[in-house]
Image (cartoon, rainbow, N blue to C red; front, side):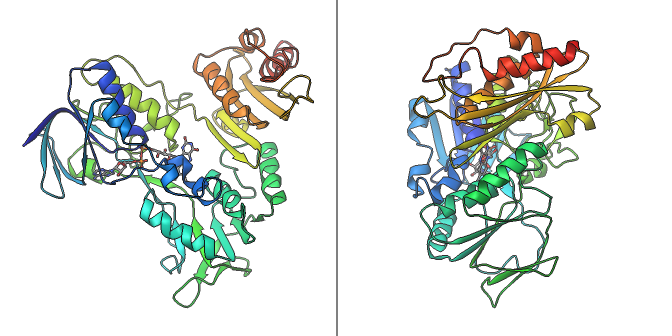
Length: 447
Ligand SMILES: Cc1cc2nc3c(=O)[nH]c(=O)nc-3n(C[C@H](O)[C@H](O)[C@H](O)COP(=O)(O)OP(=O)(O)OC[C@H]3O[C@@H](n4cnc5c(N)ncnc54)[C@H](O)[C@@H]3O)c2cc1C
């Protein structure tokens, strides 16, 4: 029987980061990753296979990372965790003994119970290279594509499939707007307008009644009776945690079906850790369970879990929830709470919003507008959320705002923090969006 100090189940964002962190903190320990797939896709890059990068092979996590970090690999499916014996077993009957186990088994796409969902031509967003190759062939032949779900994944797929193809694409969303679970109305309607301007048909406030066609999908029937033609239907409505292994091993699962972990990422068995989409997440703000599954959250958890394997070094303060996407050349991003969520959680809030060029003067090459909105708690002045739309540099700015939330900075702290600026690289120091949005809020907080 093989024996390792640390065995990690899962080789994607969470598993790989946890293994690298384990090696950084405990270089003398032997680390093995066991994962199902031969090749690991960059999960967030999947939509870009259908347009910008146009090939599956360009969207892989290179296995050289494993060798470079002294991590061993076993490709196979773990079928059982025998926690009393500290052994995992695979489908090919390999047994591996561990002293510490990391479960990073991720998530799987949700398939809604829609009539006709099993017809040929209906796809979900599986993190599986062979399956996604078939989807690429079908997209290349398609005339009409319907995407069910107007979240990030649906929007990104629609935008990418439209690139270099003369085809009809519709996004179907049951809420009044796309991206509505993430952004406040002002930002999601702007995002929706952008995708419409790029030639995508957006149908909101509509549910799918049935996917119809003779064996293969031909159309979609909506609750209003409207029919949308479709050669391909892509369902992108969310994911569910992959917890079967853990559950079968008697590891505690929470009421939302995630693996229960403490703030050190230990499961109910303290030699077994979990991180990523499969494990429980609690809000940074009120510690209540949240359903967010993002690679950025998965890797943060992995850095905490990997560091804590043999001694507690880090604690998880909870999920802030920082997202970003891009439609054409326009970035949309959000961190912390939305106004809707803040009010639901009982916060009394103040919002500061500004808009301006991302370079100075604004006529510099590549110059673009960037609107930033920051939200603070009224009594304390502490930042609890931020949203932005505009220049691609917003993709990094949202991370800075997330850092401000993490450190519980006040509007005054942000208005007076020291930034570095350059004409070609940033907004002007006079018009620097986050300082000015905070300054607008300071005025309201004091007023
Ligand atoms: C299309 C798309 C776009 C996305 N875009 C973004 C984005 O822009 N930004 C962002 O932050 N997030 C994004 N996400 C979310 C992100 O992909 C996930 O949060 C991330 O993949 C979670 O990583 P993970 O390692 O926890 O799980 P997964 O990526 O699901 O990986 C799970 C791993 O466990 C392995 N495994 C499972 N069961 C077993 C078993 N029994 N035996 C052996 N191995 C097993 C799998 O083979 C895999 O290696 C996107 C997701 C999708 C689908």
